[in-house]
Each structure stands twice: as C-alpha cells, then as structure tokens.
Image 1 (tube, chains in turn yellow, blue):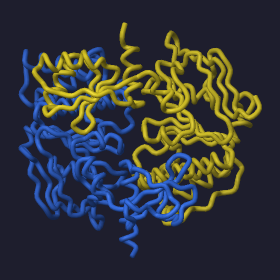
Image 2 (cartoon, helix red, strand yellow):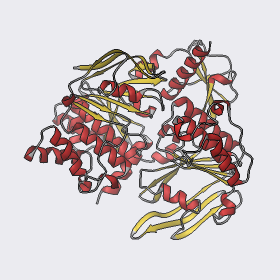
Image 3 (tube, chains in turn brown, cyan):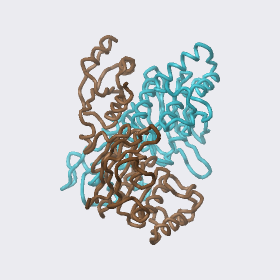
Image 4 (tube, one colour):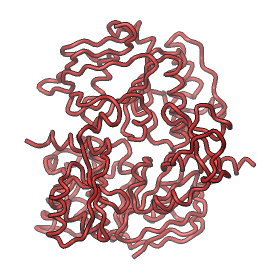
Amino acid sequence: MTGVLLHAGHVTRRFGAFVAVDDVSMQVRPGEVVGLLGANGAGKTTLIRMLLGLIAVTSGRVDLLGGPPDRERRRRLGYVPQGLGLYGDLTVRENLTFSARAYGTAEPALPPALKAYADVLVRELPLGAQRQVAFLAALAHSPEVLVLDEPTSGVDALARAALWDTIRAQAERGAGVLVTTHYMQEAQQCDRLLLMADGRLVAEGSEADIIGSTTAVAVRTGDWARAFAALAAAGAPVMLAGRAIRVANADPAGLAGVLEAAGIEASLEPVPATISERMLMLSRQAKAP
Amino acid sequence: MTYSVRSATVRFGSAVALDDVTVEVPGGSVVAVVGGDGAGKSTLLRALAGEVSLDRGTVEAPPKQRLGYLPASSGSWAALTVAQNIDFVAGIYGLAGDELAGRRAELLDRAALTPAAGRLAAQLSGGMRRKLGFVMAIVHRPDLLILDEPSTGVDPVSRIDLWRLASEAAASGAAVLMSTTYLDEAERAAHLVVLDRGRVLVQGSYDQVRADFAGVITRTDQPVRAGWAWRRGRVLHEYWPDADPSNPPAEATAVAPDLEDIVIALSLARRDAVRS
C-alpha cells in the first residue's frame, strides 16, 4: 500500500435494504487530482464519508494514509464540504483561529484579497470570498490528503481559475486530491476521473475512458423547434446545443425515420459524446426495468 | 414577440447591481445569462419579472399573468406534496377540473416526476425540487419564462432534464431567459450574455462571441506576464489582447479558446482597464 493516500477495497455500505455504495474499489496517490463524478444519489457522498471515517463500512476496507481513518490520521487531512463548514456568526479571523487551534497549527496569513474582510462575519461575505476562507482553513496544516466537495460551485470563471491554481499547487507539493464536481469543464482539470452510478463505480480513467462507447448524433435543421418536439415525443434522449439538436446513443437511421415521418428536413452527423451524455445514458439504463 | 430590458441601471444604496445593461429575449429561443456570485444575474432577471424597479432604463415584459418566474430560492412549498404544489399554482391561474388534471399529468410526465407526485416537496432531491419549481412556473403556458439558476447544484442528469424542459418551452414559442453559473450550459443557448460586476462583458451567439474575440490565447508552463495567465489543468493559458491571431507571440502555442478562456480573458482585460 505504499504511496496510496486514500484507498477503498471492495467497499459496500447499506442503509437498511438500500445499497448506497456497492463493491467500490478506488485509490488516490500523492500528487494526483482525482475527479469523482455521478448524479445526485449515485453514492459519492457516502463513499467520501466512509473514506473520512465519518461512517462505518458494511463490508470491505478503507485506508486513509495507510491505516484506518481514525482521529490521528484525520489530522493530516483537509476537507472542504459543500456547505463549506465555516461558522457564519464568527469573523474570518475567528474562523481561521478556531480551525488552526483544532489542528494544532499556526494561523494562516490572509491573502491580499481577504485582508479587508478579516473582521467581517463570514455570513456577510460574498460566496467567492467564503470559499477562499474555507480553503485557507483546510490548507493551513499542509494536509497530505485533500477532499473537496463541489469546490467552485457558484463562483465566476476568474475566481474558479484561482481556486484551481490553489488545488494544483497542493498536488504539486505532493498532496493527493479527491474532488467531486457537477461541472464538466472542471472534470477536465483532473488527472483521472471516477464515475459512479447507483452506488457502483462504472468507469474510470481519462475523459475518453469515461465516455466509453457512448455516441451522439448532431441533428441540423432549419426548423429546430419542430425537430426537437418530434424527437422528444419519440422518446429520444434529446439535448440542445445552440440551435443544433444532439441525441445520445441514437441510431441515425432511426432518427431520420422519425424526422421524415414528421416532414422535417435535417442532416444527421455522428459527433463525439460528452460526459453528461454518458451519465444520461447510465441513468436511463438504471430506470429501465 | 421580443421582450427586453434596455439601458437598465439598478442601484441598491451605493452599490450598482446593474450598470447600463441591454438584453433582448425573443420568443422561441433560450437566452442564457452567465456570471458568478454578485455579477448581477438575479437583479437582471428580477428587473424583467417586475420584481425590482430600475433607476434608469426600460423594461418590456408581458403582464404578470402571462409571465412565469422561477426564483433562485426553492419556488415550491415544502409542506405540500408535488401534486398539491402544482394544483395550488394552477388554481391561481384559474385552471380547474379536467383541464387541471390533464395539465398536471402532462407536466409531471415531461419532468419525470410522476412517481413522486404524492411526495412532500421537502423530501425531494435538489434536482427534483428544481424541476417541480420549473413545472410550477410554466403551468399556465406563459409567453415569457424567467428561470433563476434552475441548475445550480443540480446533477448533470437532472440538468439535462431541465434543459430539455426549457428547450421544449422555447420550441412551443415562449421567450426563455435563464441564468446559470455553468459556462458549458451557456454555450448551449441560442444567445448568451456574460455579466461581470453588473455590466455586460460580452453577448451574442456562441459562434458570434468566438468570432468577435480579439487577441490570442497561448498555452504555457511559464507565463510571461503572470497577471494575464490562468490555470487549465496541468498547464496555464495566457492572454495577449493586442496580438494578431495570424502571428502569435514568439515561442508560444496558440490555442483555440473555449467560452471559459474567453470569459476569463475578457474579465482580466476589464480589471486591467479599471486599474489604468
């Protein structure tokens, strides 16, 4: 297990009859940024809570920094939950002091962008600044493992790029980073991706590995509105890109038939599928009897 | 029919939430407003919905009963079931009896919420709750549909459902204005508006925005001017506002910028202009 910071081996978690995580194996090594993808309810949060030792596994094994995720090992971990985990009724400096004492480390210096907010209550800060404070608090003790739940949700493109600079700097100094995201361009910032669906790990690797055999067809037509309505009525997984219509895993001949029957002229062209389209196909499979 | 906000300025005390913003929303298309926290997205949407009055400028919108609005907050009642929420709003617009039952069944089906019809809104997942809010906003077939961040925090599968619903509303003739923090979603709209600190950074179709982008973006490990560079995965991208695309800066590889690159580059240029 040398060199593996986070490890899950055949991990399963049940809540009553419900299987939230089903036989998942994964690992995070030093210096890599791993993206964890999946729809709501796919089991991402349950998996993370087991890796952090916040809930027990039903079966299988998790290792944090080479052993069970106990209090001692959790001191070497940095975690930014989706809700940020800050105290809204404390100021920025009070939050940082609290977290530094909890980890037994020195209080981090405020970067220039946050200096003006030092004595402002966290709940009165803009969301982007709150995220920066949460990152500072989680990084002050130079954690060996960093777990980030939706780290840049709601911030603008410039602030998102700055947060990714911070994440990358952590990986470059040797930390292993696990990031959950719903943002597909953010997934492309990761070194490696894991895709969960219905509690199972269904794909891992590069973006191309995640997309796998999923295909898509672009439908170009002068009458997108009618084409869209006709294809949706036929039950096709339709999406819109500008005024072009995309259909995942469709047979071009079948689509052509639907459009012809509706009297719509269109050209059909196979195009590379996206991660979102792979996820759409997975959720449709899960719902099918 | 085209609805619009023209030359709109909105101040809250000394803060300028919108600064001379003009946006048009034609019937039959989806217009996406994109920007971060505090960019002015909600204020723009609320101005068009008649929820905020302008300090300057004009609003052209249909009367309230022809307008559908999904606010950034939930938009449904937690203690009512999915069906009760729909019936309550439909009742306000005068739908009753068979007409209401038919419309309710149709909308539940399109939003894939039929199995959840009897569930309390409080017990729905984030994605399902946004879809319920959406259904409640279109129950009366509005001419103008305004959706405030319908997809924030929603997983990609529910997000596709929401986009399908918005596209279907546009396909049947409604003018749709929606805000989002996801740039890849904005690319999908017929027309996109990027807001930054209350002003329009750029707007147009995605193709237009790309074609009009001036300067060159290069890929690098070691930026020449740190203030003009940003992180993309393992490498950095750097913006050269005055460079000629046919003659990129020496020893650098030019990249074909996506919307993320364009928005960051234009934001940096604007910060620079404000400083000098």
